[in-house]
Length: 129
Image 1 (cartoon, one colour):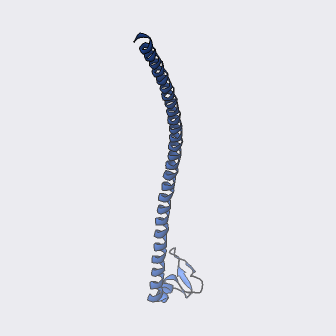
Image 2 (cartoon, one colour):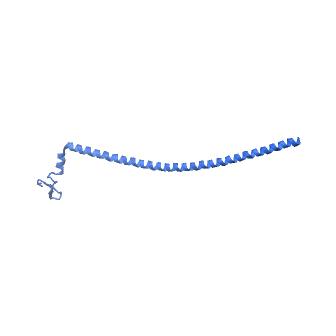
Image 3 (cartoon, rainbow, N blue to C red):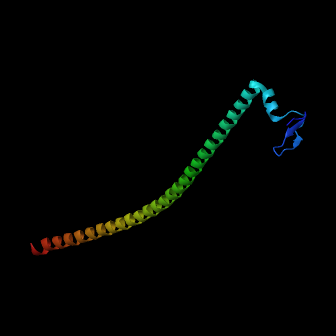
């Protein structure tokens, strides 16, 4: 049918008021022009770029968190290995000291045995020869 200015067909046979200001959506798009359309497209592209950059940053931070967790586990393992090494070195030092004392006492024993043999040899030479 016929349309009155400022009214739009609602699709149900009746008329409804159009957009505020009296201009319909299709007319508004026609009035925007190619320059504003290009600007809107460039803004949309920029927003997509920002979104993809944020997603990439999220992935990078997830990888960083994973690496930090791994490094923490490695630091704990290194600390445990250092403690075990200290215990091993202390045990080795104790064993070396025990061995040193054994060798020292054996040396004194060998010197005593040698001196007793020397005394017997002197006595043998003096009294038998």
